[in-house]
Amino acid sequence: MPNVFFFCNDKKVEVDAESLTGMQIKEATLKVDPTLNLQHDLILQANGPGEDQQIRDGEPVTLTHGHGTGPKHFYTRPPTNFGKA
Image (cartoon, rainbow, N blue to C red; front, side, top):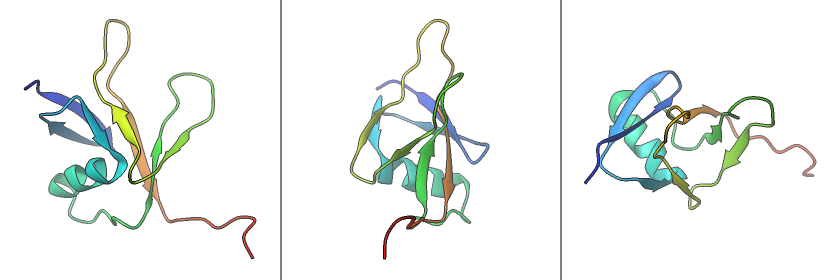
């Protein structure tokens, strides 16, 4: 299997899968950052101009990167409930 890496909360995370779900990304990050809170939202940083994207726990994300594109960068934040009563 390929050795793929990404960054989450500025920590380099190496995995042996080309695609992981949001929860799997958080669980892999937890191995290098034991302070990570699995209940926090996972956010994929936009590559260039554009909006950052929230990744749901069950949502798959392709982690490979090709020529001219770098590794994916994620960050976590406490869940928000804007607009909910």
